Amino acid sequence: MMKLSKLITGLTLALTSLAAGQVAYAKNFRLGLVTPATHVWTKAAESFSKDFETASNGEHKVTVFPAGQLGNEAQMLQQLQTGALDMAFLTAAELTNRHVDMGILFAPYLVKNVDQVPALLASKPAQDLLTDLPRKAGVVGVAYGTGGLRQMISVNAVQSVADLKGKKIRITPQVPLQDFYRNLGVAPISLPLSGVFDAMSNKQVDGTDMDLEIIVGLKLYDIADTTLLSNHMMWPVVGVVSARVWSTLSDSDKKNIQDTMSKYLAETGSIYSAKEKEWKQALLATGKNTKEVGPEFFQDAINQWETKWEKQTPLLKALRDASKEISQ
Image (cartoon, rainbow, N blue to C red; front, side, top):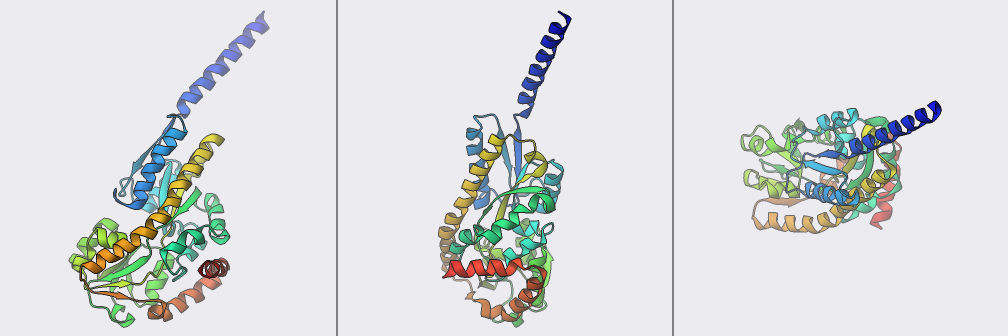
């Protein structure tokens, strides 16, 4: 009887613990990103949130915190590494601080237009970069999304690269971008997105590296002399989950996150394919000074960039080869 009593007690405790664990496991995940509420990436995050809740039968929820409410990208990455933050949509640029090889995604003129970005991000060299993120950055890279191609906007007139020399240009402070701009003779300046308009208005900076979505959305052309329509770099986003959090998830939850997050990040590609054309037309319709330029405009700076990064990682050649195949 004593053994039977102990067995029943043990089973009861086990079942109670299991039930408690299941209750504790239901969670309201937090997802952070720096883009404003109206941005394509933010809308993708919100769609993922709704779909994931449905896929988990209401067991889990995801609350989205846009516009840097949880800190800048560097701060959010630190939170992800400790498990204090569950998920984020981070620019690939931020991840280069921990995974330097990801800098090859910012090779100048990897793609001819935004339509080619999804295919290049789906290529083996780009996908291989995600596999090292848990070890190097403490996050699981779920999927890439597309961002607008980069342009330059200047408060001063720009007719040639010489007009950029010595100017202070706001950029995202990551090594591949810093290399490119220093090669141009520019002084790269770090500023949060929210401070760009005021900084340009007050001439604290002479311009910014930015995509058309923000240039048009914030009406930066109102305080600028010249917008260089250069399309000089692509700008991927990566949907990530804290590796600590990921290790606690069930296989079904991992699959639901993988499927739903990948779906909405993939949709950013078709959105940008359509929207980039609209934003360009909206910019041209303002009558503000614009100048379309290609790689020949920056050729010396590009050559210097390639020389450094080819030595730094052999993956650059593999990505360039993938790009050539897509362009054919």
